[in-house]
Image (tube, rainbow, N blue to C red; front, top):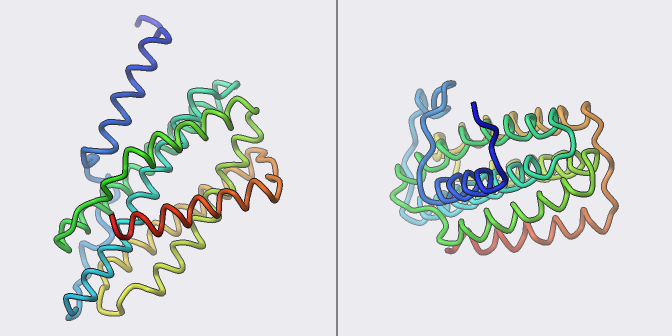
Length: 212
């Protein structure tokens, strides 16, 4: 098999980015967490609120794809790059789940998914250039913040929205495992200002994706 050139890799990343932002990934081999769950009665306002939260979750998964793919491109060690590619593939399951739930709720994904993806791709590439331990540190911190974010969403979802709650719970467990894997692989502890900046960016995305 011919080794991929830089042009090949850039075209592959462009194709992946466009697909992530506009096409639903294939169904998860593990199935859909909400398959065996029935919703209770929800008012129109509750359905709209649940859809806003799930749109934010989908945008977060889009950003995670960009982050991992950017890190994989710039990783110094081949093993680190492969680990990032595997993590991105696992996050595709979450994208499928979120988009299926949005369809069920009669709402669409964020119109700014392209900005979330390519902005995160750039951040991931910079983290990869800084070195593998820092790249893993970004994964660890990102996943820890995502776990906290999902826990808040679990609490904010309407009690009757049992299907969304099942999805969020499954995603939360996966993200915690990703954070533990990054720590075990030698993730560096990020400086406080970097963590704070990541939190602020996350809040901007949350506020915007809920509405757009």
